[in-house]
Length: 391
Image (cartoon, rainbow, N blue to C red):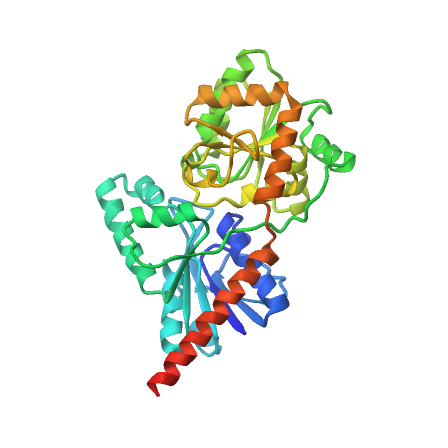
């Protein structure tokens, strides 16, 4: 099977969708055939993967500097190369230029196409255009793009509900996101690494946030809750892992709350061993996002038996039962502060929830891609039978 994965996000971009594309390509290439990734060119990038990465011309987004917008049709060398590959199926992880290219190739080659819905795009659009009306019209256009795909996927049942809210009426197939971390117990070596890197006392209780430093992730709520916890005399350390256009503002906010000595901004962490050890060192991951449809952070934390603190009824909280395999709070700093203080004062509560998270939320990328491959094969066979019936 020859599969094309198409999307604007791919390393060195370090977000969840990039990790999805990378792991789909890796496991498909390892077990089932040949993978290609078609994605944006990034200056000075070096691709060292066991599959081929084809990069097209792109420009940095003015309003989101960590991301790029692709213009594959204006890249003649890339386009000539990509249209001559005989794919069995193409999979788009974006409804934008890369996704449209995948659908065009599927039509040209008369092969099935898949498009996955990964992100609550309406919040991004509103942040850019500052108008709910315009954002709604943009969503209408995007949803029509999903309707052009032969098979539409998303990553959780709650994400299906988001698609319905956006106006998509067609069938949706669910393939869960997963984790590339093997399950691992806490070790002194792992804990010492993080203590040394970030100058954390050995006996300190550590919390972390892992993700983009953008306000759609509700990160200001974390700062407000930490201020409340500190005022009660509690000691802790908090790691903010990631970059984004609000990182500098968050640093100023933390300073204004006199939390400088307790909060550490690590920036992006490309070293997966360091990131894995952050999960192992953390008592819980604080992730109050109302933006994500299914965050990889939940799976990664579960691999380390590290529970998540999530906002109840949020899309990311699907499958989490308070105090059993994670912690749920209201979208309010006081509610979050109460839960943080409770975990600070009772290590066993976090340990129990972490065990529950591992048992109920962890899934490996190999398992997830096995399911994707079965669906690919079904779509390929269905397409061939329809083509045969027409001939």
